[in-house]
Length: 110
Picture 1 (tube, one colour):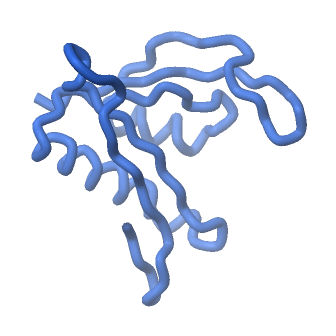
Picture 2 (cartoon, rainbow, N blue to C red; picture 1 turned 135 degrees about the vertical axis):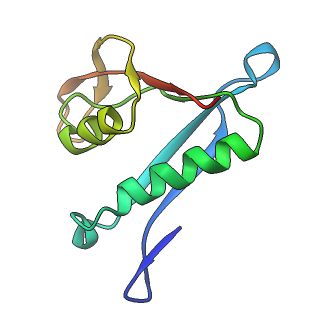
């Protein structure tokens, strides 16, 4: 969780991406308050998440569904050294009914 001016400004959820022999791969989801965007809260959350994932013994952080139009996230993940795995055409159903491409990413933690 990230606070700015005493208010919750963002958070993330970290969990295994799968179980068993793939249980060393984790996944995370992030949210930043609309009125707090542009304050590097997302970057703080991802960096904190990377540290926490490593502390918990995960070896890889994987994002299954980064929407191709989420330019801020794409730029941040590139800056932090994530690897893009290709594109899944029309893998995300937007609220307006459009299907958008998704770009899975991963980063080795060790």
